[in-house]
Length: 507
Ligand SMILES: [Ca+2]
Ligand SMILES: [Ca+2]
Image (cartoon, rainbow, N blue to C red; front, side):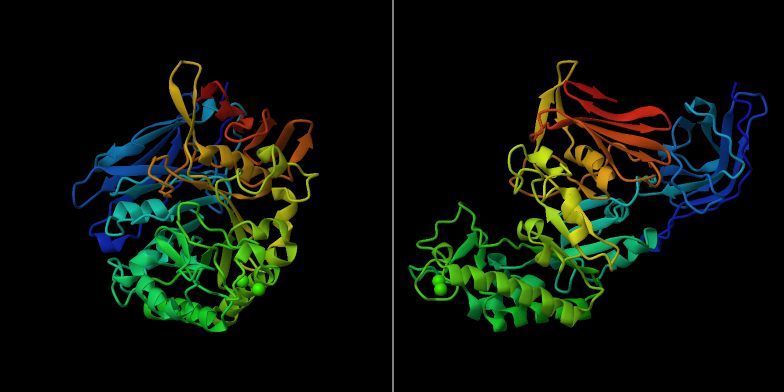
């Protein structure tokens, strides 16, 4: 029945250029051949050599346009693919091309095999919307981390952990990641209003130390004359003062110019219309940035000056670091202020959709008729640097009891992936580790590509749908409210490969 599958023979050699980590596995003699028995099985054979004798993770990638793109959905494969593959000649991956729902009538298919001694697989993922946010102390000495993190389209990490004065300062982390993924954008976390207390004792060459001591003259005091804290681990700095803004920008420039690891821009944490201070800090009195004895939230001209100072800070960064220096804003001001959003290459929706959006939060976020929905806000941002980068992130854990009676996590990465696909937003994957409010690395459960979209999302009643070259995405709004606002289904080549319809969860 599948004898009309036509495939050409291909030779592709791919190794991962991670030369800093000793001998890489080498893949040679890749040959793809359809069996002649009418079974529509395709063999991809290759030789795999690893000098260290490690077991290797292999990834099969397929192209249906003679190698111009490599996002053809790789499904129905078995054999020497995945983790734990031993070196040897004549390794074999069996691809059951006949198992796809539609017939594949192609004469321009190509295959390539990637191999990683660090055990990382490099599947093509759906188009350009994958973010990793990890603000923890990542071990950059581990090659597996460099390979894993390189798979994102946008990566947000602590700048201080890669710039000069950090333990990883002599490892060319960003260069290695870009060798694996030239399109990767890497942004450092930088505070837009605080200095972290750890700077006081940090390495004097480090970002946190320089930031702490240089902003010391610009500490914010409360109406009771105390140093105004922002979080238990940080104090407020006074960006109303041009001198404060200057030392902030100068420190970022010094880090960029003096470090082996150079970032593509900044992730600013963060910009709201007024100061926001954690309820966990025991400030006596309110912050008083303009020193007139009136607390910030009772002082309209101070709040106005704070908003103006944000713009001055952003413009100073652009003047000093260039038009192509990407600036992504955390914080709610950009979500509703078009003029402010126009200064940014993107926005980070922290704890999406629970902040900013009124009840029902997700329903508003995805309502094309609501003025500040994701679809209506996205066009406000800059596009010159490949954006806008509209990042949907949540590090909270939500769970439900599934159809088999077991507690199942809702992966916000997969949930937001469905949203991201509808409107060219970015979904951030985060592991669900119940450690405070920390952000940790996470990865998609469904790393199969849908290919490019065929048009915009289509809205009909409670359904939102978008078609892609290799499949489609459908959201059905149910409660409209986090943490379980909608069901979703994602089809690849006619098969549902990702679905959430609580209590049912497949696969
Ligand atoms: Ca004041
Ligand atoms: Ca005032």
